[in-house]
Image 1 (tube, rainbow, N blue to C red):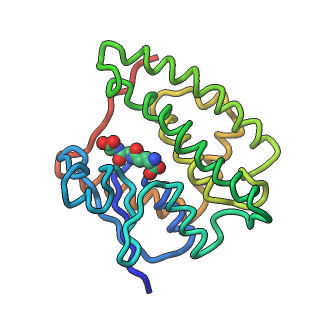
Image 2 (image 1 turned 120 degrees about the horizontal axis):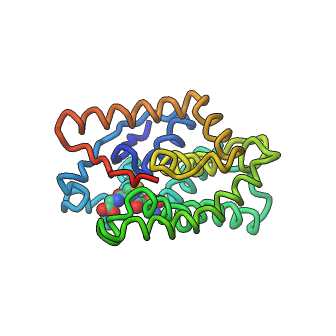
Length: 225
Ligand SMILES: N[C@@H](CCC(=O)N[C@@H](CS)C(=O)NCC(=O)O)C(=O)O
């Protein structure tokens, strides 16, 4: 059996990889990366991911980063993560969907969750306002698509649902008005019913506990609205 190790930090988008590994029922270990200690920027970690970001997935003797690449790889090796594409265009469209999460939603998630990182405390509210405004369009689009479908691709759960869930969950706890998007809210609650998602959440909570006990748990301040 291939040795699999997921380098993660609680709350981070490594949870997307954690969910898909759990959905595949693969046996894997998690290693907590301590952002507050700068472990992600250490030479040892940068050997796993030169960009100094989680997730980094060790799969056998190889390291792979970027959720989109990890999902594509795991789907090619283990299947089950994306609907079977009938042709190159369909496959490319699935990639476009995943890239929508990583390149469009994720940057907005971070600006809603941690606006002061981008513009300092004085300008945090302005950054967050702009990000919320931009996010509304995309959450609207997702909500509309989920109106008649339980999962992004219909009846079939996919890794796209894991990615959408992480984006939702991350801003839900940051004061973003998720209740304006009832179908997306229902999707998140459906995700939380899945045993694999519950196991990934438990791993995340376990990692939070470790960091909390070490005084290294990062808790961004919410802006009151
Ligand atoms: N596009 C990357 C994004 C990775 C990313 O931004 N990870 C964040 C956590 S959500 C991180 O490691 N941040 C640490 C930093 O930028 O210093 C992916 O999908 O894997």
